[in-house]
Amino acid sequence: MGDIIRNTASKPSKKEVVLKEAGTIAVILVGVAITTFATIAFALPYHILVGGSTGLGVITNHFIPAIPLSAAVLFFNVVLLLAARFCLGRRYALSIILGSLSYPMFLALFTRMGFKNANLVDDPLIAAIAGGTLMGIGLGIILRAGRSMGGSDVLPLILHKKIGTKIGPVMYIQDSIILLLQFFNATVTDLILAILVVFIYSTVSQKIILMGNGLVQFQIYSSKTHEILDELLNFGIGATLLNGTSGLLKQKMEMINSVTTLTNMNRVKKLILDIDPKAFITISMVQEVNGRGFTIVDENKEKYRRDRLDRHQQ
Image (tube, rainbow, N blue to C red; front, top):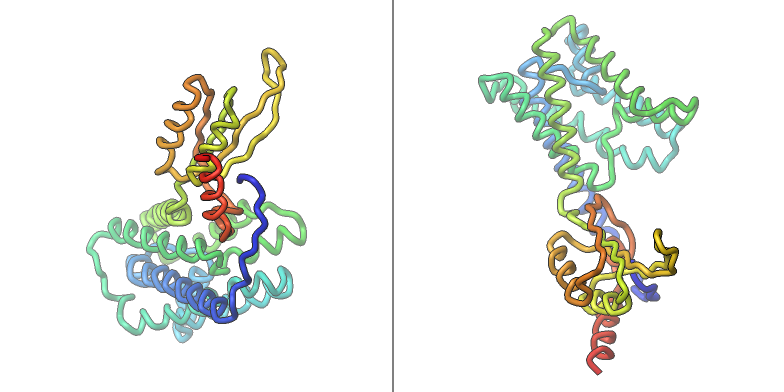
């Protein structure tokens, strides 16, 4: 948002790129570890049904006990990873490789540590709530880092690319089949708890993804748009001046569009109304913003703000 300023920021050094990637890898591993711990400690010990490659691993382990759960999950993840590489491309495969391979490793680690038989809580309902919450935190961390654990995402994406099926319904059908295949060793209660876990981790992961992104968008209609625009820019908030036509009188007019943080909302509103008490303002929540001032760092922004403030004071 705001006036276009030439970005003269230098490219990050090789060391900075390596450190950033190392940080991303560490964050993903933390997310995978949390998700895996939730599965091993709170889902499997209480016979709560699970989907994806973990569900396939549980089925395989039940009928062929000689194959450990972690080995079965690793096999299915590798198959899906290879399918992703050849059907969805190298870039997508690279985005899921760390989660696909580290997840079965953490499964083996936590199983060896005895969490699968630990029975950390007495009530299966508490286990479902705790497991769903931890899964949501882990998945949210991974998705917030821009990566994925692959698994159940792969087949729906391949079918969508090849024959145009919708991703959502295919994913639901796929996971429903995997859940039903486990029903030979489960009860209706186990299925209900599985649905509860899915609901909780979906909600929590969404909250984690949006955490810290409390942003609001202002649309300002006023006869003093240029004064308001100057004050917003002096305040350090980007804004865009747009041309429009009023609905009733069909008069040419200008409006301001601006995005800022939730903490700035009342201050910006006061700033606008101090200049024009009759200004028409709409304020709406936004979930995500990309671009200059938010996801693109501009080293000239502060200097530009100071220059405008100096000119304003003169």
